[in-house]
Image (cartoon, rainbow, N blue to C red):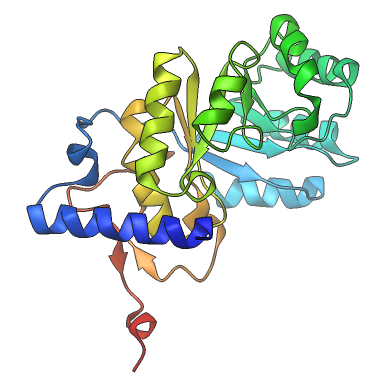
Length: 257
């Protein structure tokens, strides 16, 4: 079964069970309500002017994630800092192709207050990650390198944390297993998402009580969200008290005629 389909069915079943029992999905997993973590806002490849325009559009956010791997990476990071947005992390998306390049970038970013670096090198450079992990002045989080529990076991001692995405691992049930195992292993957890609707983001947000950071800005990055229920207030994705995941279908045409 394709992972996106498996994820959709998994979310739907958990949402249904929550509605039938009058419980939030997080309570089903035994996650108590906590103060909401800051949600990062993603800044992709762009010109400096475009970046500043997007920062202005997202002025209610207090944590920014900068995608790196373009020719003007340093200019964009510098522009973000000059705009007063000093709370930031980066996602290199496997862009740095050597250990020395990765270390040069990490040192440069550390000097500028970066929180962590996500997936600095390609997945197939697994042998170099241990040395990077031992030498890095910033936490290293892995995304593409971690798909399921088997990958997590293989990556012990080579990273400080992992990015858990529902679509990547197949839904809430496998994500819960992955987050729990990461917590037991002492790894940091970033809850992430693709460019997806409030349905996926709110489902993932149910696990935020077990996460260190959340990157669930998908609904703010798309214009065709058929769901509602995701509220971003002062940089936080607020969890509502609705039974299930908290997502509310607003586009009835999804059911057809």
